[in-house]
Every structure is written in structure tokens, then in C-alpha cells.
Image (spheres, rainbow, N blue to C red):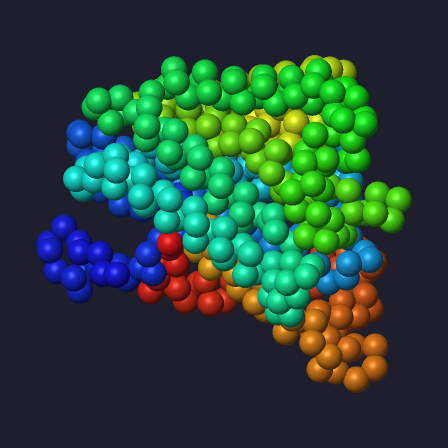
Length: 418
């Protein structure tokens, strides 16, 4: 699709492959030009920090998926098996938070173009279906073994949470098109409290209550009943059995809260933040401290997305946004973060390329111990570094290969969207 510039000439436009980045719909706003937002013209400067935060989330997500060796990795690049967390556990929830940050601007841009609520809801529905479909395709690729196809997944969760939250925000928005902050706050609290009540007080058949474990908790029990173990995440068995899926049905409900909290921050920024760094830092630290303080009552567990996990990750997202807001004022920092912006500008394309290239990286193309390109990179770096560092350096090489076509797309202003 060709976007026309202010002069009306298509030659000045940007070619897009309509529309992923769920959060790239506000590209016009990010450019710093005067745009129509919720019925009025604003000259809000480009929020570079959001570009960087989204891009860093994608980068670390890809780094986790593309290690040089699955047997060797630093702890911060491996997901915690259950309670607690490592750095990499923050990546997916922060990405959801970024989706929420951009949602007020995305909806505002479309309303400014004359879209009705019905138009917006149809657009959201199409996006949701396509994201889930792409997620299922990537889960099956390249063998497409339907008997063991994992049904839940990262893109499936992104699609469902985005669709649910966007529909709610559209349905409850005010007459002037602004976000109904009170409704969003109440809905967020309802999600977190209802989910905690489910885990803490509602007895699970044959297991009782409270249950926050990988076998007898409501998310694990429902996922096994709905999907069956053959269609769930197979890599973290409990006593040799597949018991839970980290992107299951029930835990998708609290994941919506990450996007909703992002919506609140985005709506506040849209109205104007006098001191964004201080405000984001204070609220972010407050949420993280609250989550830690509540651990005796509600443990921080990513795999069932506990309410404390939501609070901690959103707080971390706010804190990082504050840091990156400072960085966007530095020319050196913006140069160093260029790759992050490239990854973030084509988030879906980056994720798809990672999955599509994985069988190529692992194909047996070399003789002997080198075997695959992935292993060859690991073996090379192992000669000069420790196994963990070698795996990290090999992963950076693989992720850099993914970056190459993204740079080309970024320079030509090609963005894969749904």
C-alpha cells in the first residue's frame, strides 16, 4: 500500500505491507508531524523511547530463540522453570506493555481518518485472526506434524490479548474518542483480582486450593483438558510428563492486564507528561516494589502469569521507558540503539524470519562436528571463549543475519503489517 505524503504525491509516500506492528499504526504520529489524534491536531514530538523499548524486546526475544547451543546459555537468557524469574522472562510481557502504550495513538489516527467504531472493531478482529493463524503456521513449520502441533504460542497470545483489549477500549471510549481511563483502570483491577481469586480460593478438582504449581493449578488443568498434552509446549516436562503450557488459555486473561496498563500510560503521555522520566520511574518502581511485597501471598510466576508477575513486568517496562526517554536525548545513544529501532519497526517480520531461518541454521551442511551453521558458529567461538559466551556470540551472529533484511526494509520504508 502506498502512503501519500502531505503534498499528495504518492512518490513521497511509504510503501507498507499492511499492518503488523500492532504498535506501528501510529507511525505518522511518531514522525513528529502534526496529526489528528482523537479529533484534535497535536504536535506531540516523536516518542523515540517506545521505538527503542519495542525493538529491544524483539531483539532479546530473538536472541533467546537463536542461541548458539541449547546446552550452554547464561542464566539471564534462560526462562525460569517456575517461580521467580530471569531477565528474559521480562521480554514478552514488556512487548505486550508496548502494544498498550501505542493503542491510544493507533485508534486516534484511525478515528481521525473517519473510521467508525464498527470499522475499528472489524480491523481488530481481522488482525487477531491473522496473528493466531500465523502463530499456528510457525508452530507447525517446517514438518507440520498435526498430531503434535502446539496450539498455544507467543503470536497467538499477542493476537488474543490485543484483540480483547482493543475491543474493550473501543467499546468504552468516550464520545470525543478519548480512552475511558476509569473503565480501563476498573477492568485491569477486575482482571488481576479475579485471577488471583481463582488461583487462591477456587478449588481445583482433585487438587484443591490454593494452587500455583505446574500440575494442579487451574491454568495447567484447563490447558490439559482443552488442548491435551500432545498439543502443548513439550520442552519443560514435569517428572517426564507435559503438564502445562506457558501461553495457555487461562493465563492469557491476566496477560491482557499488561496491555491495559500500557494503554493507561499511553493515554497519559498523549495528554502530556510534564516530567515523563520522573513519573515513569516512580510509578515503575512502585509497581515492582508492590509485586515483591506481595510475593508471600501471590508468587511471581511467568508460566501462569500471576498478578504479581503483571505488576513487576509493567513496572520494569515503565522504568526502562524512563531510561530510554533519557537516551533519546543523546545522539550517541540513538546511534547505538539504531538496530533496536530497526527490529521494532518490523516486529512481525523479524519474528517470522527467525522461525523460517531456524531449519536452515540447523541443516546438516558441514561434515563432522561442525554439522550445521549454528553449531559451526558455536564451535568457532568456543575456541576463544567459554561455552556460555560462545553460545551468546553465536546467537548474536544469527540474530544479526536476521537484522540484514530488516535494515533493507527499514531504509526503503517497507513495514510488514496485518
